[in-house]
Each structure stands twice: as C-alpha cells, then as structure tokens.
Length: 338
Figure 1 (tube, helix red, strand yellow):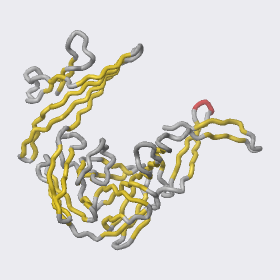
Figure 2: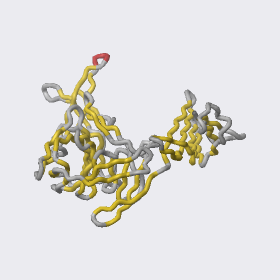
Figure 3: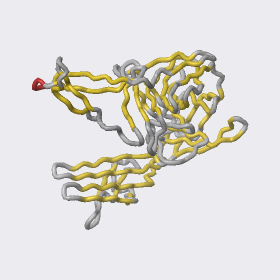
Figure 4: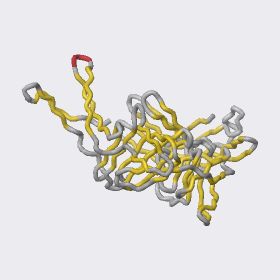
C-alpha cells in the first residue's frame, strides 16, 4: 500500500510518498520518501504537475532467494474545471550485468526488468485471439549493447532481445534459462535445423512467432538472408525503414489470421509483407441515415498499416470524393487518422 501527499504552504504537486515497506498495514511507521523533482505548469483552465520519487527499495523473495529491488514512482496530476486525475507509474531501476563467452571472446550481457514487476524471467509470449495475434511482452536482454537513448518493451534492436525460450547471438542459437530474481542467467548452445528468410524491403524489422521457439524480432536489408530455426512461423508485425530523425517508415500488423511461413532446413523463404500496398475503403450505415467511411492501407500479406512517416512527418490526410452515376461529385472530404 502507498499514499501520496502534498505538504508545505504552496506545494507544486505531490511531494511526499508513504509506502508500507514492512507490509504490516501501517503507513506511519515507515520513513516517507521526498520527491526528487517536480515539474509544474499552470494556465487559466488547466494545472498539471509531474513528481518523481526514486530509491523505493522493496524486498522480494522467490524460490528461497531474497533481494531488494529498487523502483521509481512517476506521478502525473492534471486538474481541469470539470475534473482532476492522478496517474501513477512504477518503473524498475534495477538491472543485472554479466558476461558470456561467444565466438572466442567475452561479451557483456545486461538483463532488464522491462515490465517492472520485480522479476527478470518474464518471457515474451503470444496467443492467437479471435481477431489478431496477441503478444505479451516480458523482460529484455541486451547482448554486447550500445547504450544510447531509450528502449521500448515492444522494440528491440541488433543488441537487444526479448527474454524468450531461444535467443540468437550472431548466427548461434542458445536455450535461455533465467532465475526469477535474475541472479543466474544461463546460455546453453543448441544445435538446431535452420533455414533462412528474406524480404525485399530496403531496411526492415519484423516480429515473428513460433510454438517451438517463442517470439523473436529479426532485422534485415533487401534480400538479406536471416537465419531462423526451421518450422512454421507467424508474422505478427513489421516496420519498413529506420526510425528517428526525418525517416520514412511504414509500420503494420496482421489482423485476423496472421501470415504464416514455413521455414525449411537449408532453404530460403520470402516473408510475404510490404508493398505493393492498396487502399481499402469500407462503408457502414450510422444513425440519422448517415454513412460512415473508413480507410485502411493493406500490404501484400493482408496486413493493415498502423503508422506512416514521410520525411519524419505524418503525410496529409487522404482526400476522397463521392460521385453519382453520371460522375458528378456529390460529396467530398478527407479521412482522419486514428
């Protein structure tokens, strides 16, 4: 349990945090935390503040192993004339660090509690829902990392990997075994029948899933052969292009039945996604005799595009016209994003 408070004559926001660290149901016998930083903005119609509390040490025990896990709390408060709202987010501030021997040399490994639940062994998983492939992201493993910028749970990179059944370092596959508190991480080399996949995109990343090997993110360039264990793989999502700056990118995911490819031992399989793209307009009757139109941009595998950037910016909203049988324009407008 925890409670937030704003103390002092003119507090800018929440500046004190009480946490029941000894778990006895009493918030008054634990030392409170003072805020590290408060950002405050006020206008005629709105007041907002953001408070940060660091160093919240929580004891955790799993399988007979005890450890103190440190969290940070981020509090966002917004007040409007009609209502006020407080949003609280807890983030893990702990990582594990070690080394493995790969390719005749030692390389650095970092293990992140990416979902901030105090544990380090949460694997990425997937299941086929009724209308889409649902992926539940877990923790993150950084292998020989180049630590620049921030990372998302839903985006890895050349040095980052989902905590998973199997992880690929270079072209070598390892079985991964991680203890709940992250004090033990084992990489076991495994001999697998492998094949290759490729795509005609100039630069791409794709998240692929397999019952036997879990969820992996792969990255490649045009017609580059990317190694994968042989088996049936489903394509969950992809991004064409390189993010950041004035990049041009297309992101898409597979609704309904995801695209499936059979990776054969020693063979190369084309990943069926990307251009050519086509516009699909659907119509649905609404109240008052109105007709609603929606636009989707669909790729070659039936995937629906979720994001576009051209030169780092979103393109203008597409225009449309409604014509009668004679070709006369009876209505015109533009689609809205979202």
